Length: 122
Length: 122
Image (cartoon, rainbow over all chains, first blue to last red; front, side):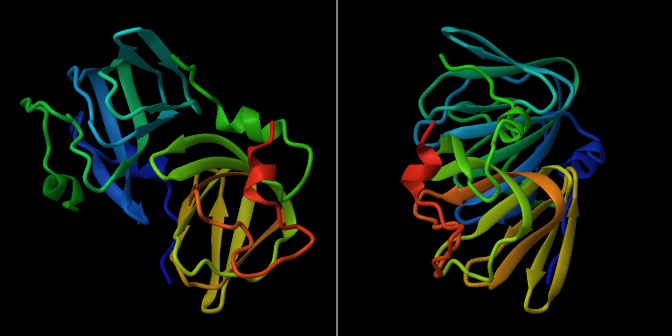
C-alpha cells in the first residue's frame, strides 16, 4: 500500500526550472510536478491534451488567440493541437497531467527539453 | 479560448455531498470536483485508476490493507481493481481525475450513485 503524496512538497523540492518530475500515474497518464520561471517555448501536442494546475505562484499561458492567466489553485487544459507557451514572471510550481506519450516541449526540441526517462529519474 | 478554472471554487459551490461535478476533460478522462462528508461505499473499478486530490479538509481512503490519510494538498491514486471506501469525518473538497468510463461507485449501486449525465449537469 503506497502513501499519499503532496505535489506541492514534491515541486518545492525540485532544483531545476522546466524539468518536470513524474510523481505518479493514473491509467495511461503521468502526474508530474514542475518548477518553472521564465518562458518555455511555443509548441503543441498533436495528439494529447495537457492539464496545468498551479500549486503556487502564477502562470501565463500564451496562446495564439490570447493569454490565459492562472493563479494559485487555478487549472487550465490546453487542447491537443493548440500552440501554447507557458510563461512565469516569478517562480511558479505546477501540477501537470499528461499522457505517458506526451513530450513536454511537444513538436520542438530546445535546450529545456527533458526526455521521459529524465522526468522519471529520482 | 476558454478561461482558467478554480477547482476549489467549483467544489465550494456544490450543494450535495458525494455528487461529483465534471469541470473539465483531458483526453479520455474527466476532471471532477466533489464535496464529501461521511462514508461513500466499498467499491472498486475493474479497469480504471482513480486520482484523488484534496483541495480542502481531510480524507481517509480505507483499503482492505489499511487506511491512507490525505490532508489538504495531498494526492492518492487508487489502482484499478483495488477495493476502497473514501471517508471524510468533516466536510472535504476533492479534485478527481477519472476515465470518462468510470462509475464513481464502481461495481456497486447505492443511493449515493450518480450517473455520468448527472455529473455533467450544470
